[in-house]
Length: 443
Image (cartoon, rainbow, N blue to C red):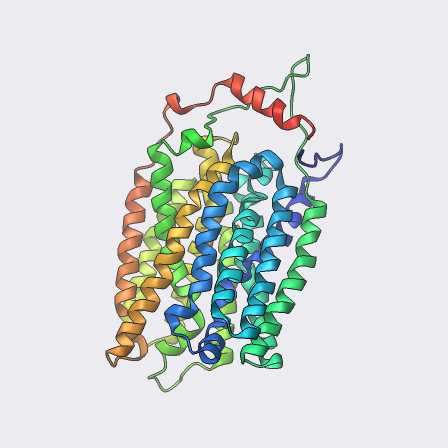
């Protein structure tokens, strides 16, 4: 299958909206916490159990991105976006059936497994294409698209809350909300499928042979054999674990945190907090990734990990004494969380080149799979155990905050260990040319 090549005069600024249509849709995953209280009530679930669809979805995101990355590079972004559309929308429809019949395993299978495949393929579908369209500003380009994933919950959170209010928070209401999500996202994602294009070959020799790419170029298979790849894997895993634990449990967490104070947080205010976190997540993806084009990838990750640890320390120190401080620190942490996602493709491009950066990015996202289990598990499991011990309020999360600080410190050290890739891992120019010629052949 040949990817759609842009005709002469095609504007590269049409590609980010195509990517956004997919990322804004699959970014709904970050609004999962809005469904948690209703699911727990309707199906008699614990906080740990209600997190399972989200956790499995993130696991499948990383696994499908890792195994599908090479196919995305070979078949192009339109193929990938189509697969993402089918899987993500189907996942909601299966979950709707599960809610309607009160079969929780169908919700886990639909939203987590099937929808998670759509998350992974959809997430990496535009990355290498955007880097090729914007070689001068890779951080900004990937930040624009991946901003959509962070901002998806900004739309989905109040939208989902409104649907649960209108349809009801019982199993039937949840099923109707899932159904509307699946159908709406199918239509919206189809816009990206129709619009996306890949750039025309930039240069060729007199005989039409493609010119090898400039700079360091490393294959996906070669990249996973380098220490740089695994250092970045640890960096991403630690940064994501520290952010996703808050994000997955955002609505119930802020409610619990200030439950014992004179100004408890209402359900609607908690949904608003989720939307604020999504805004910070989205802003961090474009803001911090664009900043990385100016100050460098290693320096920006020093900020994400070092200052992020400081924010967690401030939350732990203040406890439930200051709601504004809690909110500000959480917003900063989520901006770093989003920025880390948006910056990592450009970091990979700097280290390994553009030759198979999409496939390398897909393999790196297994770190997200790991973090998708670790973050919610740490926060939910510890909160459940503390609640069983009779504790309440901010004391439910004290140990979790300390653990997150330690994880960010580990990521900081891993970032310091990143060095340029040794020449023995570079791809020969002849292989680059042969692979480019193969991709240009019609299906």
